[in-house]
Length: 222
Image 1: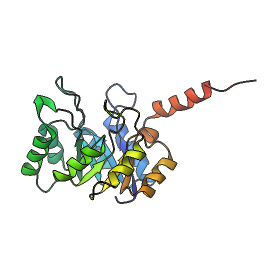
Image 2 (image 1 turned 90 degrees about the vertical axis):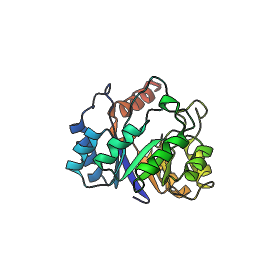
Image 3 (image 1 turned 45 degrees about the vertical axis):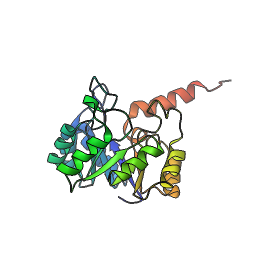
Image 4 (image 1 turned 135 degrees about the horizontal axis):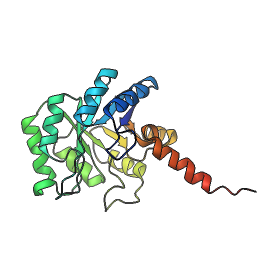
């Protein structure tokens, strides 16, 4: 998937397009538009997507736990489910936030490497130091997925963080998170990203509509 577009096909339970069938068709549309990979949430969605397209899949499972802010593949249980389903890459929150049951990221990745040594894994980070730590702990890929989504990184520019991470580690880095225009995606590749993940700007029509609606509300009509 090097230098390619990966489309994130996700719709959560409170969203209009929440359906494994619909996400499979989103993946097909993305494939027809030139996507070279898919990022998908949940085993059910992944199974449906596999029936429609033969593309590499980055798999995640989003799950809320009462004792942690970490939502993206938060525990080894979710990793196990994704591994058993079979995805090319398993992605997970790799921020410095405490995971469910007070588990640290170091312990979490250690267990993954021990139980699934051949599985490729991707660390979704928010900051440069998290990317450095993830590389030290043996992940295969880092992604800028959570830049701006943690308390310490609110308002941070994902492309600036991407550039800083690229200067700090040697493993592949994928640009993801608020890459919402073709120009930003192009710039991410120019900076050195191995690939670019785009989600809401392609697969969430309610968010796309909102951008048009908000901008049009600013129009000064004569």
